[in-house]
Image (tube, rainbow, N blue to C red; front, side, top):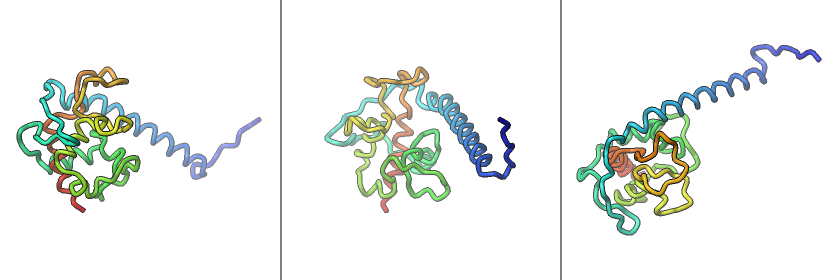
Length: 169
């Protein structure tokens, strides 16, 4: 049976083109993440922290983070925040819908609560799909490039905490 060639503007050819584009973009993103993120915090030992209730009260660095750098990390797809979360980021067309919106995060949680959610969300909810960004022990199904390395550095955690703390509405 001979197949008919579809014109370039047909619905089926547009969907195939879109599907190929999505696959290529996703592949490029995953490749970039595999290269970039393991380096973000490599070479640094984890800094000690104390969990008090549902928070890490003290800064991981002993200093407040930079909210401007924190915003840049949140909207950068390699840090993965907006792959799952949405928020007040009008320049980002595609935002996640798997997790709570980050809008108003600074009103809902204290800096210490935000810090613990970033460091190890599974300590609050063992069934969470949110990665532990600053934990390396006791994890399963960790890719070889990530083993023994936190996803984010202590400085990056503090920068994101500083930014999320500004989101009051």
